[in-house]
Length: 172
Image 1 (cartoon, rainbow, N blue to C red):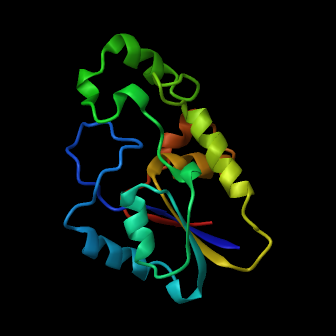
Image 2 (image 1 turned 90 degrees about the vertical axis):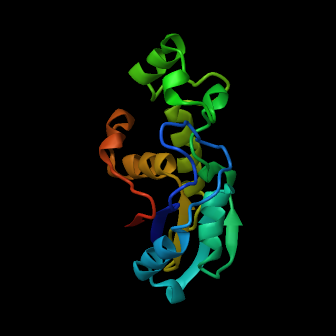
């Protein structure tokens, strides 16, 4: 099986805001970003598209004109109480413990990075990887990094060395 991991296009939100699972829209550059993504994938050969339910992923998934399976396990990290707050406004008393161990420390009323990886790996393991199908997974940087770390035996704490730009396509 060939899988094309695709990160959503540029979200319509100011820099410096924590937006994990917040359902924010996309920017006006969406059509040009989609065109570049489509050039990297043999869409006519794709069987199925899987997508995070968040609109920044779902809208991209719809452009492939294939059957789409929406799966909550493909969502970005749940930042709980920090959603839609400026990173600079999050008190260091709660931010620092997470920053020092984002893999294991749970965001207040959210999740830890290891929790995210667990659900993304669970999703991946539910796929029929024995087929010759070509599939697309549209998701976010966090889930894509976590899955690639799992597949490449990279420790989660080192997974941010895997750079995933908006609209990036990684084939596995």
